Length: 597
Image (tube, rainbow, N blue to C red; front, side, top):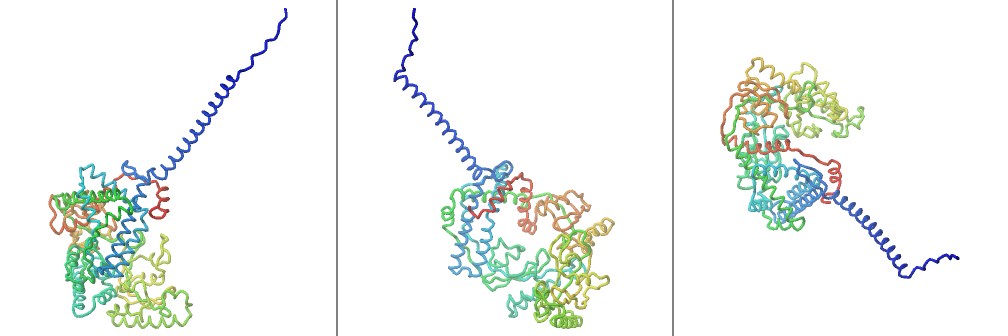
């Protein structure tokens, strides 16, 4: 039997087509999946990148996140507000409400704020979150009408006055540290004398310069304050009221005593009336975002509502208060452990009347000899009549100094280290080592006019030694030792304290919550009635005697003082207790970008 191999059947066209179709489907599905994966990956990268650039938290406040976009939005909003402020000041200038110089000063202030908008925006958002969270927990709410009122406030520029003040501080007679009633009376007499000069026909600006040259007004709240609103005036309420009660430019207030024992009077050279920008909100909304601006205004309204609640509780309401006396010593300019301090007055006679170029003139140059001759003549004149000091300091034919001359030539209480070229903490010193060697000699009597002292970098110095005393930390330690060993607290305060209430035995009065910084209040609260607190280091050195305590409502004078400090001190405490974190790298990157980007 014969077998034959059976030939395999030839595939049909339909079967070939079916195989090709399946292959195409598989390939299509594969490519589709690959494309989908790629798109998904790209989408993920895009989403991650977008989140990193926009939605990622840059900071957090008690669990509430603040995104990068929120910071950028606030930057843009702040810039819109600043730009509108400048435009409004331009309008006020063009309408003759403010002068060109006043406009330039106001514009510079706004421009300075614009330059820090990156860092400020995040700080604003953090502070708003803290206040908003407090308000929510304490059921403090604001209505749409209150938000509208806040926007109206934002768009209204309060009356501004160009203020000039002459201030005469009560200063202790060296080498004493504490101010006596005689010092206070002397300051009042000087201030009244300056006012009498003006009333007799002298220009206010000339008398202000005279007070500065005498060392009376400098650094004591005097001078040209420029165009300013009443709320921005950092003066006692009675003086602020008097300034804004003046009827017209050129009018002068009476001499008024401040809580710091300084005597001040003021004038106004210009009055800019209240200005309303009716297009404020619409302009900012067009430049930035209307909803964001209303949210900002709502936060401002919430802050004001919280402030009202806090003031109602701690300013006008009854609180637990303690009657307190204090001894306070200013922190000074040195570091603890730097040793004794000296105070002196100085006139400098420089080669060729050029203090800044003295270091470049060799000591054998005749210009140094001529400067020494002038210094010798100044010493002789002052030894004959020390009352000539103020006029000689102000005379540029005699005094070439440009650093201390506007303050009567007074170099305040400083330790030896500050006289060095570089201090122990690597800060720039006065580069007056030769002066330090002379004034730290033992046995010098206050008021002594020293022989001329050569300062190679400046010229020949004519120095009046004012006094020498222990360092601030040592003085408060000495005071505490004396009190703890039986010395009457009030008597020690009159002798040692540098606080404004020294002349009254350190009578601080009734101390209520948030009247002082928290570290001071904590020390007072921790001290039993009739006892003296431990030493407190808080922008100076303090000890407190707790006289008595009671629940009481502050009187009108105390309330006026509390209105200036209670809410800021309360806010400091709120912010100190908040749990805040910041992405430092992201904050730095944002700060390096240009404003508004």
